[in-house]
Length: 222
Length: 76
Image (cartoon, rainbow over all chains, first blue to last red; front, side, top):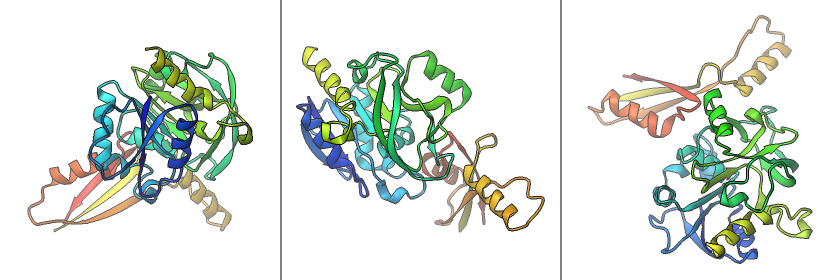
């Protein structure tokens, strides 16, 4: 699998994401936000966590309008895989590749801890190494992770099996306990928890490694 | 010419920051503050002849996230 990890000014989990993908065998190219093209033959675009553009205006809003994001949108529209974690999830909602928005945590505090998640769907290629209902442990670290959408949109996401992960003990006020969602074709995944920080025994959990390994396994067998 | 854009969370979208401000006002002894909503004011210096439609487009594309926010434009 060939992956591109994008760095915006203020990204700070780009190396973590690149390293996580390399651990499961991906060939990773780092891409700068001012680039207007992705490298040839990219399967997966990774949009990392951090504070792109200092979270100015709204988290992810400026990044969503950067030159590289036009290429990311084209990649997604052609059926390419896109994974956005934390600030990357915020960027994906701002580009409208994923519905809804991430608001300030209901408790107004930045939260940094490992949380329990329930895998809510496994149709997406990102989720094929999990089972529905499986409990996993993945760290969160965010101030704006409170997922919000209209009741109709939430019903639609749930009805279509597009809620990927739910918090078992909702830390931030997210509607319907939603921690991550996928696009209609399952190839765009956005989530607030950081699977790239749950890759090795030393991290305290390896539950995140299954996500990347699952995706790479799907591609190898395709 | 100048334009002033007000961006507010839509009615019905819970504003936790506004709620925190409301509680803080109560703690300071201000009674009867029944609701606080917090938003943004964005002032734009624009070339003469910029139309309201263009400013609306700026709001739709960047200044507001219309999933959760509404905006109003004042041209001066």
